[in-house]
Amino acid sequence: DGKVAWDEMWGSFCDLAMAGGPPHKGMLLEPGSAESIAELSERYAEVTAEICRGIQMVSEIPAVPSPELGWIEADCENATMAEWLARAIVMENVSALHRDGILFLPAGPNYRLEKEIKNVITAIAKTSHYWLDHMWFDQKRQIADLFAKMSESMPLLHPGDGQDAELRTAIQNEIGVVTRFRPSPQSYPGWCGLDCADVATAIWIMRALVASNAMARREGTTLFVPVNARVDPGGRRVIELTTQVWRHYKARHF
Image (cartoon, rainbow, N blue to C red):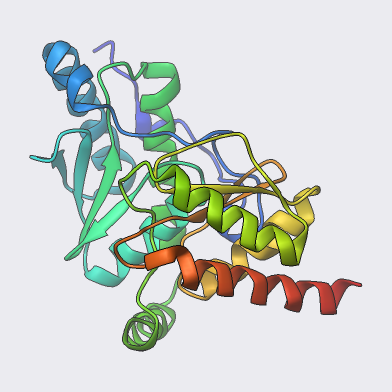
């Protein structure tokens, strides 16, 4: 019928970025702005319809355009699945959120079929494949128990939606004093970039941060940690966590 056969595109999948493999995207894919969506509403409807169609074809997860502009809602089998997928997809450099068992994936009117639309669908195909086909029930139950325990003592630290340049600079400076990581000039709302100098260091620290219930991702040698003034005032938790992880890394590798 002239449409992309999303479910017939892959014979296999490379390692997840969560497992140390290369992220699917080189730079973060962000949702479209409210202004661009209002200006190009018909194109936005086409994009969201195609992303929803692709998600359902590759994962069999029901998906619909969200009332929150810029997002697609994928109705996962439970809250644990949505939480795990959100972490894994962010590490692929595709924006993702979760709430009450719903996974939120980005959409925008400027998304192209062969680029951004494919990026979103590939990210959910890749990660849901591992969750649905390569994890036993006991593993999923252990993950659910772990998420519950971590949420009591250290709730998930995720990027905020504000452009807080002053807080970002403060976080970069304090972490840099301990780690000697240089601030990255690349700027995203809710993220703080730190140049780790080599890929191996960025991967190790990224994975350790996510295991410590803080979302993280990387672009090449640059590690990105979350900035969220509401849940982490002053950035104290992300500063302490990143420097603590760095000390563990340094002790193990030097």
